[in-house]
Length: 219
Image 1: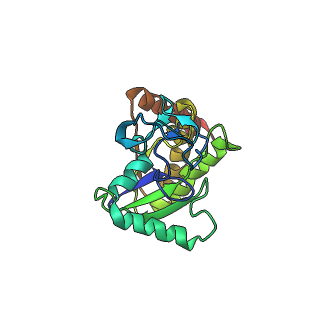
Image 2: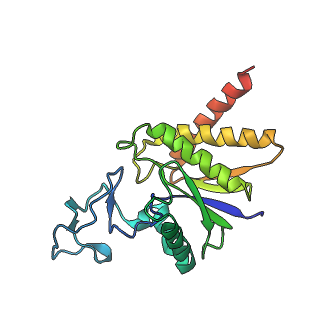
Image 3: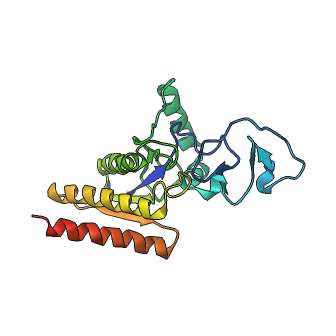
């Protein structure tokens, strides 16, 4: 196909952010039980304290992250498809850290399909850099099965707590590695990173140029 594939930083259950009214940037995964019920309501009708965590600057709402938006705008067909994948996996996680799972795009009509991948937590998973590289590699392979147009956010740099520089370095490595493989196979490829700030784009460009200069200088 000629359409775009979106890479979505997911969670192991492919459940979006529906289990949590808000959650901490960088982890850990919150408790699922509401510890207290306050009379002072937060935006969107959520309580000010749940699972032992106060709402604060370090907290994210589902609308703050790509996965939350994908589940919000993907519609009931996407929700049903991901629920079916959860059912098929039975007691196993349908999308463990470092793995990529493909689905239709539901109501996200700008995309032909979505590849879901679960990035590691920078502070809580062992070998987070290696696992994040695996996320990119698995996602690019899965997306490349059907299209060479791939849209991807900076994986790991949001809710998973990777420092932006580390996330950019890994993104540059993984993207160039995959694109060079595509060139060797005679296939063209386009990867478009969706970044929130120009300064982040400059860091990604820096690491990309650095990797390219090393690759061109190697025998």
